[in-house]
Length: 287
Ligand SMILES: [Zn+2]
Image (cartoon, rainbow, N blue to C red; front, side, top):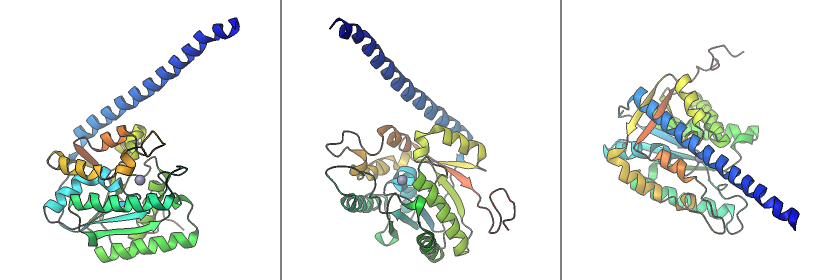
C-alpha cells in the first residue's frame, strides 16, 4: 500500500508531463501555422482570375472545398467554368469504425460532395467521380494505374483546362501525393499545357511542408476569401461525416485545427511547373 502511495506523485507528474508535452506540441504547431500564414500573405501576389475552364482535382470529397472553396465560389459567381474531379470514393476515412461500413462512408461522402458543390455553384454535370478505392492510390497495380491515368487524361483532353488545381506534393497524405503523380502523367498524356497550382490541405497540419513549398516553388498567390467566406463555410458544413465524430468515436476525421486553417480568410496556391515529357524534375533527360 505504502509503495503504491509513493507511486502516485510520480504517476501524477508523468501525466502532467505528458499533458505539457501535448500542449507544447499543439502550441508550437499553432505558432508555426500562424508564422507560415503571415509569411505567405506577405510574399504572395493576388490570384488573377482566368476565364478558361479550370479543373480542381480532389483525391477525397472535402479536399476541393477545404483548399479551393473560396476560389470555386468566386469563379462560379463570375460564371466561369469549373470542373471538380474526385479521384477516390473517400471510403477509408472511418476504417475500423464499428458502426459504419466503408461502402456507407463512400455513399455519405458522395452526397456531401454534391451538396457542398451545389452551394459553391458547381453544376452537377461538371462533377466527376472516378471512384478509385480510397487508401489504395499509393499501391495501385500497374494496369490499374495506367487505366486511371488514361481516364484522367480523357477528362483533361475533353475539358481543355487553362489551369488546374491539385493538392500539394508532398502534402502529408500518401493519397494526395500519389494523386499528384497521376494527374501530372495524365496532363502529359492529354497533350495540354495548363497552369498548375498546388493547394495545401494536410500541409496546414505539417507546417514544415508549407515552409518547403515556400522555399522550392517558383511562385505563389493568394485568394482572399472574405467575400466568399460565408459560402465556403456553408459548403464545408455539408461535410458533416468529416467534421463531426461518428459515435462511438469521439474525434472527428478532420482535426478542427486543420479545418480552421483551411477556412480562415485566405487560400494559398503554389505554382508548379511540370517537367517536360522525357525530362525529370531536375531538367535531366530521362533515357
Ligand atoms: Zn484528401
